Length: 606
Image (cartoon, rainbow, N blue to C red; front, side, top):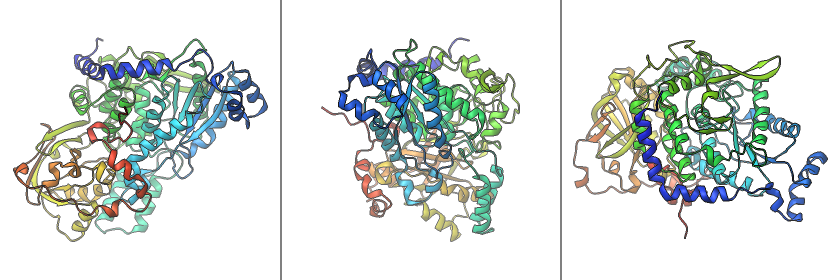
């Protein structure tokens, strides 16, 4: 099947937009690749420090300077369920590397915070910035010039994008990304949502809520809904940085261990002295990023990636914007329904055919670039296969040709929707993003009076006072990256869902985020310019009529906002003190706008 013309048009625009910046980045990055092992450039004193604590066999190999040394960069901690399984991975990777005639060292750890723990709390205001901290920590880990390839262990929201950005600063090295896998299925997502709504209405207490949440989040592995963490894993497959089919294999299983060991062997095989040299800079090109956006649309993935993909691309000298997302969303059909866009979790999605089925369908429709480089070779045919164990040995077999459950995945000729899951909205408030894959058609257009809030807790308080029993659009401003780090406002979902369930027409408009768990209430998020930067969202008044039309891509306030004087920001000092926020003032001052990735890293220096 020939490539869809819109994919080609979008890709051509992205290539033209990158121009000299991309060319210069590639030239500089490829020039860093040597003909010898990296550590050969170190002095004897440097090198002795670098292997002083290694076991004798590995130390001898490192002294000889003939075989590759693989860096392990990990987001392990044992508080996060998604990252707890990573504790075992370094030992497996080191053993597999030695068996392949190489060495591996744990180069460094990166922070890994959990949006599930910090949701609605002060720590959430550090969440987005943690991506950039992770990128810098990754660069520090690799800065010792001891490594010829790297494996990156990470799963959740800001962690994988941060690892990718950091890895791209060493884009001459091969890179293999290794996930931990999802936890097994607990209480159904519908039941979890039902209890949350009952709690929001005061019909059940905290004990019942905690019990339901504990049954949903009950063991090691990624949360099983299709939020940012699992969207990360999807992207790593679509962009060729995972072993095929590795995203949704449960932790603490023989298959997960076999895939992790194989990832180490793969990294060893890609180093510049091995005949299959595949640096990261050759994998993550413009076509790989287009494939990633296509995957995001086809699966109804996280809105957070309208920020993260932009920042990741910028680290490779590539410039994406939201028009690229919008254009691709118009032609990429929605082929998956995974909670919150459907009833199934990612385990059900995997059983029904998973990413292998979706990739096969998109390839057949000319909706993926095939002339791409991945860690397993050229093209995406390998990513239509799924891993298995045959007599205890890792193998791959053809993925499903037909859906195991067509309420979860669909073929190209019977999609859930002819368009993707994300849209760009434009109007006199600026530009914003909406995730529509979970929003019923009857809720995709809302016109109602605004009720203006400066904090999500104000919304909840108004609900408790009975002031929201009507049609309205909640406008929550001063939530952008420069104001307070752009927290997710997912705490609003149960309350707004209750009101929508009572028959009211409700929507959310905010310069904050709403996360990969954006649900059935229409939410125009990432409004840019943000209020603190002079965005007109800061001039909206309670009573203004707001129109959110996800079908036509319109977000507008039916008033002349430009004629109004700018409103002073509320006292933001409480958002800038305590819980570590004191340390992030330089990032709030330097952060770019949402459509530029809400990133603090790319300041041009003379």
